[in-house]
Image (cartoon, rainbow, N blue to C red):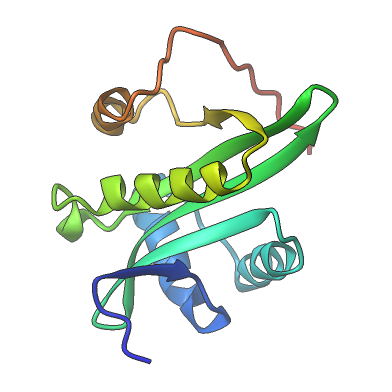
Length: 146
């Protein structure tokens, strides 16, 4: 199947390209084994979606969506929106976000979407605001556990 200008869930054969995107956007050196584990966990959980945007069969953008079951009901989280630098400002990030939101709406019982983004990613924050995400509702704190 030719994947050109489409959004689809990533496949195992896309992991090397996914690692390239993560390296460029987040300066993250993800090992092959960690990328493989990430892929396997997402494939084995029907509430995790790792979406990719493809141009001429090449993965050029990605976003991760996770539907969570909380005591108060279902909620969604969006992580790791990333587009290769040479493809930015072309609408790919917006298309990925819209697709993630369409998936969330298909659940019918999800009350809200949490969006996580690094504080240094000021440029993408403008997109999030444009799409209706409010950064002044809640505050997240992070503690790393080794």
